[in-house]
Length: 197
View 1 (spheres, rainbow, N blue to C red):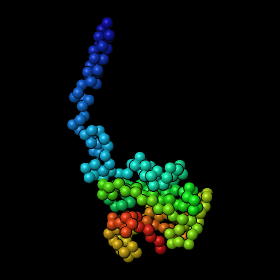
View 2 (view 1 turned 135 degrees about the horizontal axis):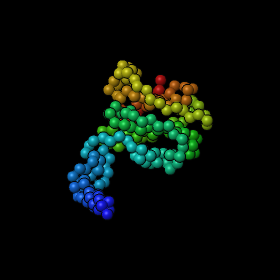
View 3 (view 1 turned 90 degrees about the horizontal axis):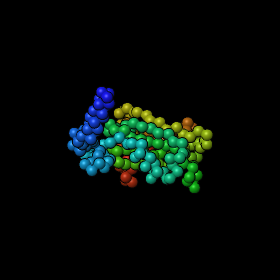
View 4 (view 1 turned 45 degrees about the vertical axis):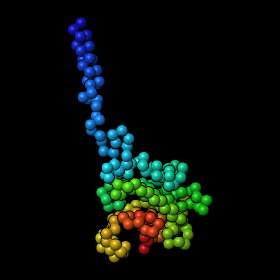
C-alpha cells in the first residue's frame, strides 16, 4: 500500500511538471530564424545562416532539374565566399542535356544574408576555353578547392580584394577551370567568375 501511494504521488507530480505552463511555455524565447508565429525565415534579422542540406537540394532541383539529385555528385562544404558562413557547392555529370553530357557545377550561398545560387554547365571535348578536355564515363572530373595568396589574387586575377578561394574542376588532361567568388556581380548578375590559365 505504501509503494502504491508513493508511485501515485510521483505520477501526479510528473503530470503536473509536464503540464505546467512554467515549463511548457517557451513563447518568450524565440530562437534565431523562427518568427513569433513559429515560421522559419532564412537569414532572419539580417543574420546570415549557413546553407542547409534542405536549401541546397531545393536549389539543386530548381537549377539542375528534377533528376539532378539522382546523379552521383561531389559536394564541397565550407566558406568559399570569405564571409565566415558555410556555403555548399556540388558538381555532377549531367546526362539529361540533349546537346551531350556536361559537368554541372552548382554554387549555393547565403552571402550578405541573401540566398543566392548559380549553376554552370561545362562542356566536354569542345574547343571552347570553358570546356573540359575529356569525358570518361567511369571517372567524372574532380571537384576541389584551392586557397590562393593575396599576391596571386592581385597579380593573376587583378583584384587583391576578391575572395581567394578557387573552386576547381579537374579532368587531369588540361588546365582546370576555376571559379572565384566576387562580391560585385558581372553584367549578367553572376558572382562566380571563371578563370583558366
